[in-house]
Length: 89
Image 1 (cartoon, rainbow, N blue to C red):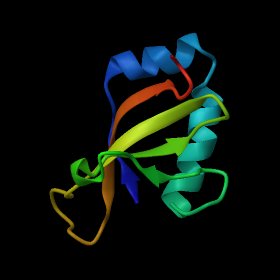
Image 2: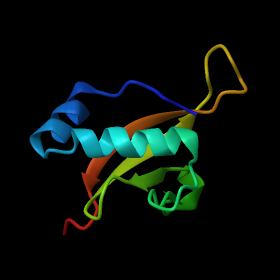
Image 3: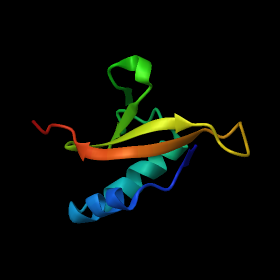
Image 4: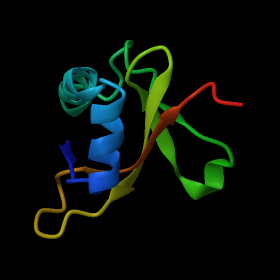
């Protein structure tokens, strides 16, 4: 599993909220085993959009989609499209 580089705004979001180390830890778990229990990876509604998330901590989640790898089709690649407060109202 490979995670593509993501937009600078998401990096700033992580830094501002002190989530860099949590993101790094969860990313390592994610690339090793997408089904690791502490990730809580899930397919979001509506399911036909094929948008997923995994947990950074109890409050924040990384939202991602699967992308086709440009050179090696056997490597699954994801793109983080958002990091957000899971319980924001």
